[in-house]
Image 1 (cartoon, rainbow, N blue to C red):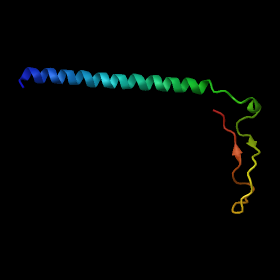
Image 2 (image 1 turned 60 degrees about the vertical axis):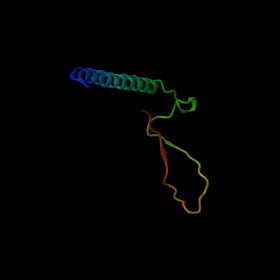
Image 3 (image 1 turned 90 degrees about the horizontal axis):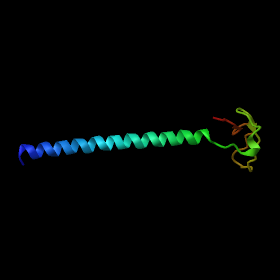
Image 4 (image 1 turned 120 degrees about the horizontal axis):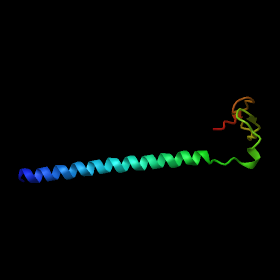
Length: 80
């Protein structure tokens, strides 16, 4: 190959590499924007409208013979 062919090859390689990174940046930006938009529109179940962050909920679990602790495993509501 002569010098001109090598120059054309590296120019095409640089263009392809730049286009790839530009495409990846654009796709990640749009993906993160869509994810943030979905977080804003999160619907709360109608029965959970009165529950505030930090409220403890009553949870029924079947009795296990191995684990009979009363205070472990309490569920605390965290709203974001």
